[in-house]
Image (tube, rainbow, N blue to C red):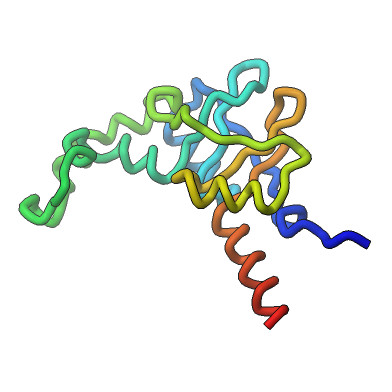
Length: 154
């Protein structure tokens, strides 16, 4: 009997976001799915990118925040700046999604997932079959399953 892949037990089926979804709906979908990011698809269901926590923070905070190397000189509360960006909740996901996504096909391996999580700054890896997103693997779920397996062996 061959060993079971770690990832087979942590695969999640989550909703995909449409590229024209607004940020408000995208964030609500992430919260409801309890996922740090969701795949973004076009009208035909083809994977276009990822929208997640990092993209939301980037959309919400003023653009200069992404350019800062240090933010200690900025007032502790950014309430005024956030008020100015409150309208971003209606912006399309396509304006903020991460398009340099990495995905795997249905026959992925645990080692392939480890390599992706080690070399890319991604929170989720979409699983794609026949051009359609069929699920995701989150970095957190992969870590938890991997750590359980290691603790069981020791």
